[in-house]
Amino acid sequence: MSGGHDETPLIEVRRLKRYFGTPDRPVRAVDDVSFAIRAGETLGLVGESGSGKSTIGRTVLRLIERTDGQVLYRGEDLGALSAGRMRHLRSKLQIIFQDPYASLNPKMRIGAILDEALATHGLAKGRRKERVAELLDLVGLRAEHASRFPHEFSGGQRQRIGIARALAVEPEFIVADEPLSALDVSIQAQVINLLAELRERLSLTMLFISHDLDVVEYLCDRVVVLYLGRVMEVSTTAELFAKPLHPYTQALLAASPKPDPLDKTEIIPLKGDIPSPLNPPSGCVFRTRCPHATEACAAAIPPLADKGGGRLSACIL
View (cartoon, rainbow, N blue to C red):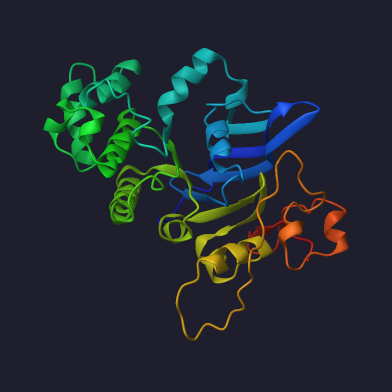
């Protein structure tokens, strides 16, 4: 993990909501989510499938529009910007997609894909070919790979190309949307190490979306735990893995235990499936699966409260 971050948020998400469906039957994919990411920091966003992680990532970048709330980049509300101003900022805000093959145009050579990103934003004028070679080298590929098509590469190599395309425009902030989930386990470690190296080398700020807690523990400085579109806990990575506060976080960590014969911690099973965002439970959305739930948990949505040391948890217990 990196350290010494500027305390001023580069990205600030305030009470973000993203609903789908109709006004009378909204699907609450993201419901009142707030967090901040400091410059140079990697923030992990974790939760089960269907918790709203990817929707948050795309809404933050304004790839899909918000329903309510704000996303601030250097204090500027992205949702209030004109199309021209947003286009200007696109080079500063980039994404690495989950599926490296689907995100690359199969009819374009790799060199043309990277060159297109440079040309669109008017970068590396007069030396775009050299810049393409530099980008390929940066992600562990060779200059001659520029003449090949996406199908000629392995999944891991295609994801490296996706990373190179995101870096081509010299961004300040990157959303990495489950960039390892489509890769073989044997390749994942290589891409993880590449991302860690690039983060330090280029002083990148990242929102790292993943369901793999081991990767999050290795790569991220802080973690936001998400359940059914709502934030359950926010903590530094070290504190969260050492002593999770929220019952949902405890259950997630218990589901991927590390073998330790001396560890006598009680494992809390996570039973059932995540409810539908079309009809979320009243009060605490986790209460229907929480082993500690009481009648009071159904009465009101628990606020995301400071539990000391800057740690936040949304639990009344």
